Every structure is written in structure tokens, then in C-alpha cells.
Image (cartoon, rainbow, N blue to C red):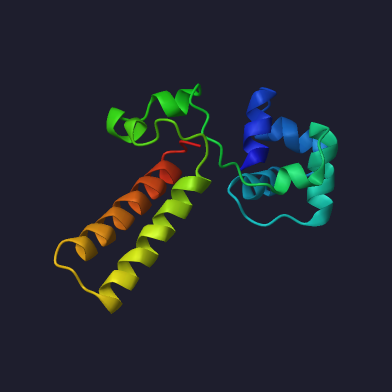
Length: 137
């Protein structure tokens, strides 16, 4: 979540952020793990980071290809995202391929096209989930 990224940019520990925001460490841990935060918690964190509350609630989906996390990814993963700057177009591509595969299967099941579309949708989804699990974005 963005709170963790902002905290690390400032070189603060969770304990330091908790002290500065007036929250307890467990609350900071919950927010960083992606659990829902109360409006009061968001106000406290926004105040410490000097950002709008909306910024704290946005999901980070931009691929930072200069980050250490991105550079640690295997070559086969990075190759699949050449020229792609965010996760959203890849997610849309996955959904389009799945839709086309379903339509192909329902209306004109073709021995080669239908399974290829399903496999492509599955592979794209797998790459996205792999990136999520390895903090690639």
C-alpha cells in the first residue's frame, strides 16, 4: 500500500510513524497490509505525510521499472511488460481475451482459437498475480 511506500521514502520505521501520527504500531501494520483504515486514521497519516487523504487510498498500479523490486524480477517476467507503464492495460487485456474466449466457445468453438484464447487469458492473469505477489508495482 502507499503508506508503506511513503514511510520507506522518509526512512521511518513503523514505530516512528506511529509516534508521529499518534496511532499505535498495530494500526500502522494493518494499514500497510492493505486492511481498511478509518477516516480518523487516514487523517492522521495524511497529516504526517502532508498529502491528501485520497492519495492514501489510491492503489499503486504504476510499474516503477527503476525500483530494486522490479530489477529483481526474472527476465521472462520483465520481457512481458516491455513498453507497458501500468498494470491496468494488462488487466483489461486479460478480461478482453477471456471475453473473446467465452464468445468463441459459445458461438463457434474452434479447435485452435478457443483454447489459445483461454490459455492467453490464463497466462496474462498468472503474470499479473505473480507481479502482485512479488511487489513488482
